[in-house]
Image (tube, rainbow, N blue to C red; front, top):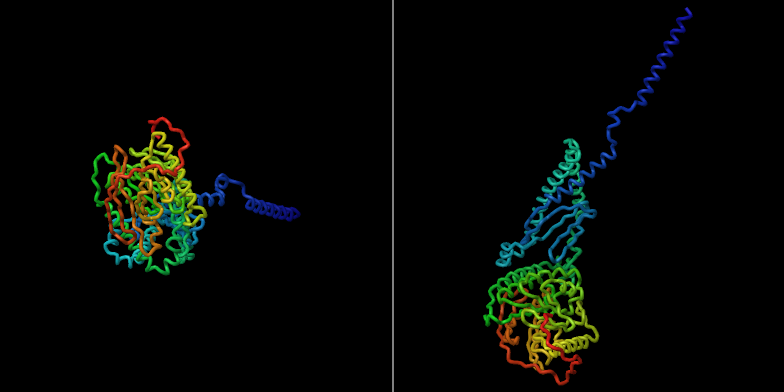
Length: 525
């Protein structure tokens, strides 16, 4: 009888111990190989995020571009990752416009590739279409952005999925990466839509050569408020540039003796990109041997403008250049590094295409068109130094055929020391024989006063000259003065002038050279 209670007590204790053992076992399970191999959640999520972002970015770079016509232009649109969003419009080679159009982790890039000749010619033939150009551009941009949105979705999904498959080698995480990439793109689009700022076009930021656009044509707000005026100017500009190209291809060319040296004199281009096309056409039509630029090729002389000079290497003739008051020393150093360009300064002489040139750069740098006290005196002093260098060259037996300066006041100081001196600066053509026999030839603006052409009521013409030299005695025979209608005009005028026989004699008031005569040198300069 006593054993029964003891047996029952032992049974209850055993059940209690077993129950506690099972509870302890469930609370602290032993690690198994399967649990040890399971990845931790945070590193896995971080790795997937990196795969998604990298794959989406690669997809946008490879297939995320859309070529779309916008008005008369061919453009390329693309979405790019960005911390601030916005829109960037690249207009090569002039620069770019940046707009604070939206806030999102993607930026819209629009690259203006080129003008379509067919659509541009249609605007020239039917200027009345300019009035509907704004609506046409809006429709083209809308269609282009819709195509870009579809292509971008395909690009980010394909890129993220492909990279996920390459990294994980399993379809499930690859599909998860593609889905997450699409979700991120949709969220970015929603953010851009929610923060869209249509007024951003009124406050663009300009870079490159376009940084001077507000001071030339007014700020963007005035363009919008007076859009009809700018529509007319745009129509005139497109018409004018197209017709200028047509006119220069049919200019009558003088047919002198085959041995004649032909020199194209240009000046005061002032950043007009149409000038390079016109100069190249004149070089081809007249079979020009050398181009002489008497300065003010730039407008502000900034380093950002230097890329404007790159087409000089493709003009088809050597390029002789002197610095104007709108050209900086940075401009001069950039040209000195270019092949086939001969920079003249401080009276240095160069023999190019059979003619010996010497020149000096403008001592003033006034890109803002300001008047510097003592400016005229500095110009005359620069001219005196050039005249002294010309005397030294003549005494050395290597006389200069053509002197070049930018300002007429400096050029006049060479009277009696050289047969011909070329200059510019005043934006109109002129010729005079100076007191002691030197002929001064002043060129107009080959850039039609550049971007400042729209500031005046009557546009400045585009002017250049072809000078014909006898190859034996290197004297000027004749010149053709070429004048093309400026902004909105399509006239072309070529006038022939025969050179009378001028014989420069040294001025009796000119100080004698302090450099002793040297034996003639036959070395190339």
